[in-house]
Image 1 (tube, rainbow, N blue to C red):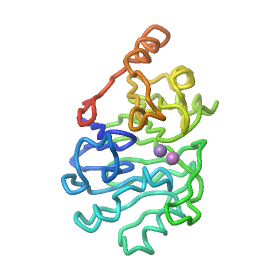
Image 2: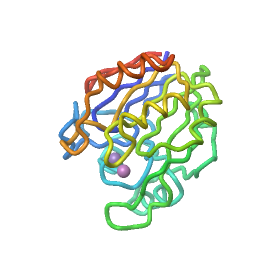
Image 3: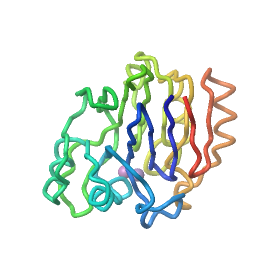
Image 4: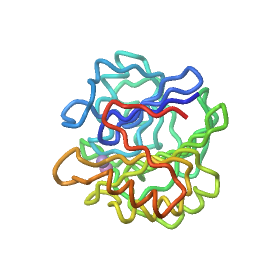
Length: 227
Ligand code: NI
Ligand code: MN
């Protein structure tokens, strides 16, 4: 059994095979956060790109939990320079068998500058094959791209995709993304954090249910989905 929790914005928790993962842990200054950086636990932290709303509270959580950080080469080493001891750099298209599953970094159409202006490499999404064989695609921040069809060819059990518009795909492109990805279930993220990315996830879900085979799971911040 795998459990994915949406903490608001693009912040995710994933429990799989006894491991606790955090993805883009942004709690402090996140008006949508359902909990705090002090209250979460992690064995591994995955960072999709360098923007402040994704790097978030990583260093503080690592200092408290001793979690390892997995990201692209540039961001992993940026955390290493700040004293994070357990870093694992990967890069786009590359996969690695971690204790919690096989994690591949995927293409994302976005930026990746780090909060201090450092170069953050290229932004990524995550394709995780869990130890019990489930495939989870966490797109994180991206615009629509045609190669989502290639990701869909892998057979996606759960896709987590942005719908907020302005910085990422909006609802219409996110619907097209579901058609490319063909997931069994899809969870929308990266919306309603600020007015700039206000969306109605229920009306989006209605359209997706009509036009695709995917089951749409609209979570409130703090809610979980088991699969
Ligand atoms: Ni971003
Ligand atoms: Mn973002």
